[in-house]
Length: 355
Image (cartoon, rainbow, N blue to C red; front, side, top):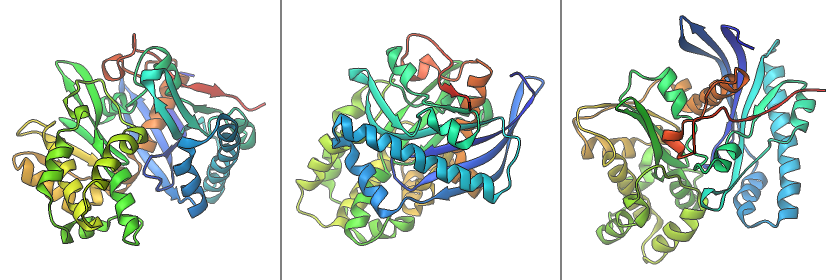
């Protein structure tokens, strides 16, 4: 398949558990240059029961994980089918789906994204490209982040592409080579403490603004060993559970104080990874956190922090997984060794064809 245009769905579920993002995307290649159009996009929110199960799954037995994988695959297929029916989408080239990360332990040679079982192709009667991370881990890579090649292809006008989701990650060109890595936890922590106050998330950072900065906690957070490591590096919920939550809980302060201190911590770490006088494309749910954005501006006032239109803020990762899927169909490189630390660049992802 080497057409000049593709009509695909990009499907993404992030660690912040907001739900499943689905974007109907048109991708065009003209004279070697890729461009895109997000035609329709929607987020399908998880029920409270699914949020709880996906949160707890990190502790599941192998048998329970297998059961969860099957059930989640059917859930994902149901969301995708509803999206296709709602917008009367026809003649898709592929559904390009990330799945949902449950376990990510690249140092142990293991990563698990559920929802990528072959049956999803049969349910949808569509070609499905999915499970993008496993091959990279097998090639001694981190299996993350994967979207930087899409940043390079579609958003090269920006010095940096910053995503603020469950974790913050950044990508940029350094002497012609794409570099990318995770910076810090974001919504995995902020949502947890907002929920303690009865809110699903800290809307615009309003809760954090009410808090008091704990300078000692901020100092300890910034001293975590991960921040001193060189890239390639990536984060998962395991890091938050092992290092971040125990540190936050060791302080006898209220949730608003934690939110303020951790938001300032996020801003400090991100700003520390961005050069002066640059421009940064900011996407992901955290882009709506006005308090966080103001803290970024405070830390690096000479940087232009660009929050684009809503469709790109919310659905950039779905868009880029659509592109990764198309590159896989073309058997072209869609994972960069300079980003993940794999043995070499490669074309990753499983292709399931309907029977």
